[in-house]
Length: 204
Image 1: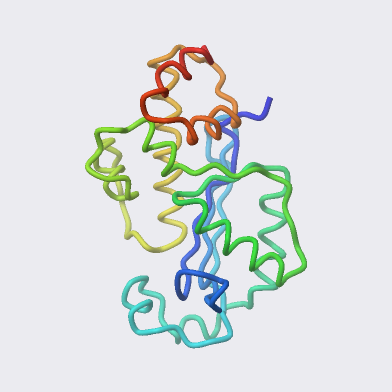
Image 2: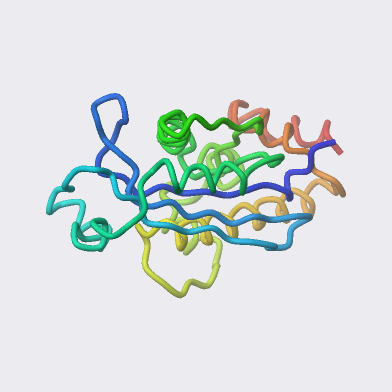
């Protein structure tokens, strides 16, 4: 069984919303957990080969000057492919990060075998009373302590890791499921809100 508490939780900062329209990754951060414990981290700026907009500079705090001296995507993603080898992947709004991961790995002629799960979709099922399901809101809602700034890749991946482990603990405590598989979280993210309780009871 592939465990839900053993995964790589990742986050990209990017020049825009879609690699299909020419946007590129400008930073990647990731946290590796094994049986619920952080065992490694990965962080790097990525030179996108283009200037980023003043809006993105302000939003992320990543300047064109910083990116000018950063390694290129092929270099970073070759290292990152090694980092995620053999692990399933988690991201908050995973469809966004998966698009950039796939595009940047393809540029580096790299691939991965792990499956993806989305912490945002899982939170919509488990934390239904949260004001919204943005990462910062959920961290406050869950009472998780923070020390850093959002919209930097490693910090966001650290916060997503804390949220992911919080939700796994919530499932264990409420449904007495000692060992939660990664596939259970993937299935949960696709359930209707009304069916969450019965689904998790059936997994106990």
